[in-house]
Length: 67
Length: 451
Image (cartoon, rainbow over the protein chains, first blue to last red):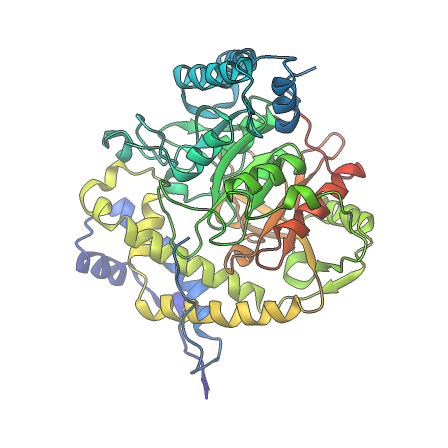
């Protein structure tokens, strides 16, 4: 069974990012928060591509190991 | 004669033969750094006392008739995220400057010391390795020895520029998304990013657990092979095989996604492909999605690693990294896990491609070094930000940990540019063979440049 997930990065607002930051106790000045919002939307645009790909349920996250 | 253009292997041979002393080599290297590094800003710390002590020990051993190790008396330096005993591990960050000095050398520095190499100091980088340009607001930008108005690439920019400028024949760096291969391309030198896990990361300041690799820079593929074998405790024998040539190797060009480069990168690809008679083209599946996944994982793991520092000392971060790390800390788990699942899929699919080819060639960067401070670039008519996109061809490869040698193509009157020689896991020997063939045939070269 495969599934893909929809994500629309264009709708992410500054208040949403501010709220997410506050949940992590990240308190930045307004100018920084505007930059964080821009960077978060950029990450989200990459995440759109990732989430849109149908992956078989049997595929697990890549294994982690420490060199 | 030993001079700034000499390879590591030749310096060691000359010292073993008594043609020059290790102290003499070290003093000359320290003098050129003192005279010229203000132009390039490669070093954040020079360690003359330690260097001269290590060099004197090599000379004493020779005088006593002891067997000298393979890199006896060879000067080298390390990216400043490696622990150097007695010095603070900066990792390019002002925040780290208040940390206690390292109490021991990183594992790979110990291995270099065992091999006889002489440590000259620590090298500049992007803050916490998050960047492709080494434009560091705390320690200044590293400038490209080919053109000081241009970036040396990053994040191991100091490591690449120090080799290109002939301060040292060898440096160590790290590569998470392209931080060995991008600066190798920008500075016109050879760089090796081995298979994920091949080299120990002990004593190196981490960035992204899933992709962090140690790597090295040199002006010859031979020096890369020698140092890689030594850093692996000689579990590999790349040096022995480096002159086997390319007969019998199935070499293909990476098409599709990797064709989104400027005309200079296209010319360099054509030159290398012709020299290797690589007419076949392979299209790796879903490369853009692999790059996107690497981007998400990097942001998430990097942001999480620095969350506490962002909560307490946000204003002490470099303004180029602060918003990127803070945004990364906010990445939802669903994105991160889906990217890690995609990584499994991509690895499986690319391994199928390697059933039919031994080596794949691809540009290391979409264009050559851009001006320091430049925000955007145009590739095939598409305007894009410089800083995140210099790694667009390297990210999908380190995403699944494949070994890569970046080889330099010098262009008359222009900046150099690199090509990635990509092999399947643990086949550094094949990538190094191809690099050596290109070097011997004159297609790739890494001259010392001090513009």
